[in-house]
Length: 299
Length: 317
Image 1 (cartoon, rainbow over the protein chains, first blue to last red):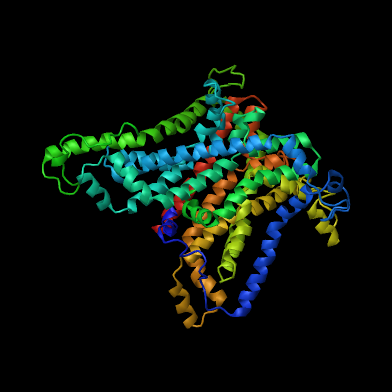
Image 2: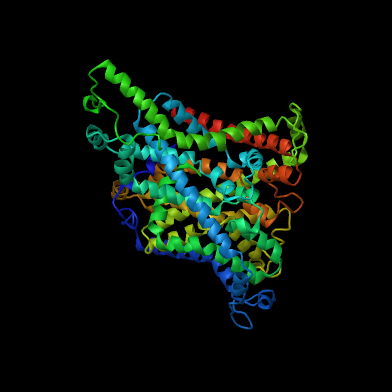
């Protein structure tokens, strides 16, 4: 796959490509025009957030009154947020999402990096076939597996457990491929010196290869974490009990339970959106580079 | 992982470097050790891979040949009956048609708008981080959040969209309740949600194009448009092929936002094939039938993937 074109930025020093405008010789007019167009679009892109926020800060009566207005007649209020937090499963669901996504990311990193290392560095019998099978599996769409996976989890008595949420979500074949490509670029001399000194494979892997691979490991971790955090279909099937739901699934149950309480619906949605948006504001650069690096390898 | 030894076995002092192997004996011991190490490092991934990917693929195939229900009854073999039923099932074909329709009308804007945004932002605009933030941040939202936002904006009386139309003197639209509009409403929400991802990929690809190309072109007097069409666009070719393929495969799997916003309605007008699989299994209780439709869906994905490989071969040949 075409990861080659994009796996380079990760190797570059920090921020080298990020903010450098690419085409200097431009007539100012076209650049001003472009800025105006992009600004208008960017504002349009923020409207759903803004409208949700405006609604969440209204009383239910104001939220449901016509004609609609951005400024409520009886002033802004935090009632909806307070109600949602009191009636409260959102904190529990946030913790569930955090825990399961972190576990999925950690397991994915460990198992993908070690198999990728083996394929990149060790000459073992069956390695080509193994790589072929892993690459071929990229084509299998997860929804095809939901019925047999449900059946499997049911027979293992794992429905409505964290195990059911975590275990089936740790196979990310494209990420094995991404990691393998990165390991291929690390000079072998570094490891050979250590081999001569009598270091074992596992030592070399954990003390030489992994530290050198921090950028790609971060990129893979970000990609897997975002995917796990937002995954809906499988957690929706694998859990029923309210205390075990992840945020996206929990939100779906709120929607049907609250019905027409618009302000509370929007408050819940914003609270659910908050964690990743905050993380994004802090780690914008890393996240963007991570997505650009791993993105083309597929989801 | 724990099976891989942390210290090298005895005889390490005589071990050769990988490229100059002096004696055949050393070679065979090295390769045996490599075989053990290789599989030991692969084992953890393999365990998950076999248990949660290969096994479900097999058991799903077997299940599709049975009349198995969610309660576990009727697990006897019924041959290809599920498949013959599915191929005669109007609802299955309709869901498949809806899915292809969604894929078509979502992929085009998700690629074209992403490219246009990236090209504009790459023109040396100030505050690069701001544009990335605006266009990419929706991608970080869960589908449920996106659906709540848009269902609210699509509200016939209280929604922003109809308010905007009213200001323009256009009569209100029943966004999610009109069979001819609902799929487009879902596409608008989807574009808002995920176009930022393709936008980032395009932006990264644009920034990888060597600056000298543009400098040479401007010396030759080529203007901005000319440079975009004769340099940027051809250089973005491989990226575009990949983005289109990945987008098609992603769109074919659509379920979340449709299920959350319309539940497949009105009257099945937006029901996707994944929702049909889900409903056959979990509301219709027919696991066997549902597994068969899963395999039909998989067959479609395989066909598209093979077609892509074929055309790629032809082009490079």
